[in-house]
Image 1 (cartoon, rainbow, N blue to C red):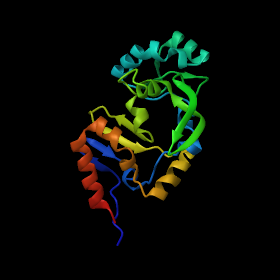
Image 2 (cartoon, rainbow, N blue to C red):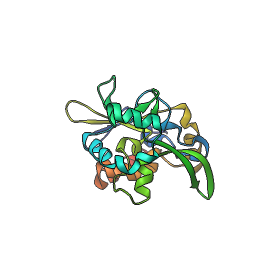
Image 3 (cartoon, helix red, strand yellow):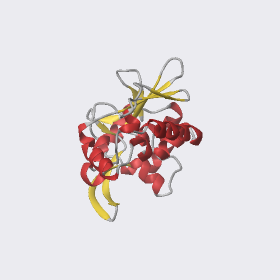
Image 4 (cartoon, rainbow, N blue to C red):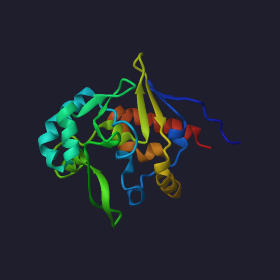
Length: 205
């Protein structure tokens, strides 16, 4: 008999939607080319300490930003408060993150031309900075929400442009929480992640 999953899974003080365990997912940049950075109507959620890190990196990544992005940063800074009251990275034209840049990358031995990249992450990978990118970007397609009592909620954001990620995840039989192991450990710690894995194993059919 197939086990019935609870509507909410709790790990420590974090509440998770069960599809974080059940959904198969693996980003496929060869297909989407990083469209999540240039689609949508708001920037990436960002914390105050991350804003400070980003501001410290501006001189390093400035030449990688488009002229339009530079103008937005000059006018309103690296972040703003969106209509839901959350701090998010600044955007260009109502959608593109200001730190969007483009270039060719190697993915599993295949060259992906004109891929949408993050100027912050590229600088980090080039050894120019220790800060990579906001944790909300690293966790995507998981989105986090902090409630007034301090509890954190994690939900899987299902987006049509990520269909290729679901297809690849199913091919690899890779659960979403496994795909995002590194950012989940960075955000919540190894002990928390180990507990999540134990719970996922108990809920497996």
